Amino acid sequence: MKRGEVRERILEAGEALVRQHGLNGVSFRDLADQVGVKSASVHYHFPTKDDFLLVLAQRYSERFLETAESVIASGKTVAEKVRGYSDLFLAAFAEDGRMCLCGILAAEAADLSDPVRREIAGFFDANINLLKGVLGDASEARFVVTSLEGAMLLARVEKSPQHLESTARDLSDRYRGRN
Amino acid sequence: MKRGEVRERILEAGEALVRQHGLNGVSFRDLADQVGVKSASVHYHFPTKDDFLLVLAQRYSERFLETAESVIASGKTVAEKVRGYSDLFLAAFAEDGRMCLCGILAAEAADLSDPVRREIAGFFDANINLLKGVLGDASEARFVVTSLEGAMLLARVEKSPQHLESTARDLSDRYRGRN
DNA sequence: ACCTGAACACCGTTCAAGT
DNA sequence: ACCTGAACACCGTTCAAGT
Image (tube, rainbow over all chains, first blue to last red; front, side):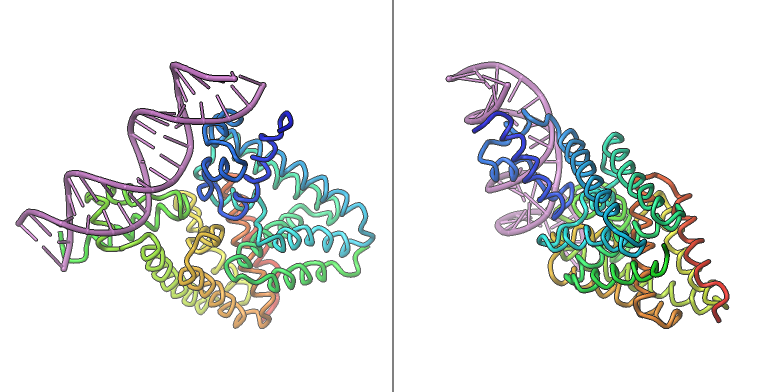
């Protein structure tokens, strides 16, 4: 195996597992099994679970925000930009019902270390800021984020992408005729 | 101790712990310690963790919906009814940052048994139905629920009741002048 | 630099045994 | 009817030991 490849595969498998099962639903032994090493090796790359979550949150946040920015930049109207942004959540859900990594970790906020908690909070803050640029208003931007995160929560428990789809449509319909 | 009291105290302690830490953040040994019995006794009352969660979800759902109905009945305008409903979430958050029980379990939907998952889905369905009676529209009702659940998620990770408070205000402002 | 086996205190669950 | 101790396979974490 190439240099740094095990570490990368642990992160890849970890993201999938955390987005499905949350912080406490994934074990270092599971990760080790999926990657083909022993759990002690996972600890070599990430001393504690918390170190692991921090890296996971950072790379998720970075990647998501980058995609979000480009999708918003490419939309012509406000409604189109919001729709493009919503579609990022739909796409994640379509990938075997994956929750937003930061959304599912937020639910378990009480068990997160302060650095991880702040990283997650920063993710939402950046998203709200990004949408504020589109919608003008910060509380309106917050609405879009909370609606989508909440909609994912419900869609997961309802096992229904349909509901998430209709929320996304309703959301962009709200901004028809602006800009 | 009185008849059935241990069972009741387990449920009480369990609800608090689950709403703080989620499904996997609470152990039968923790519950046993808080109540003053051994973990095997908790298993006597609730054979598996899943049995426990089902009862927890049922009684939470029942109690919440009852309160929600009465608070909506007592509001005069649509805005007042929505505000009263939102205040239920604010009050929960004020109680040491408690998440909605069904909201936090929804995040871990992938790890729930089908009966529990359906109970949670039923909770949201009933809430949406209740609000549909106020707002007329089902998708509008769904919006209120997803916004509030999402807002709780964010507020927990931001450690900020202020943000939840302003979401609640924005929400009821939306329905000013109706009815 | 990267991996491992063995150990620790934890977890859910079961069960035979007590009152 | 209600509780318990002891056991099982699991978990995160540590560490000395290997390559």
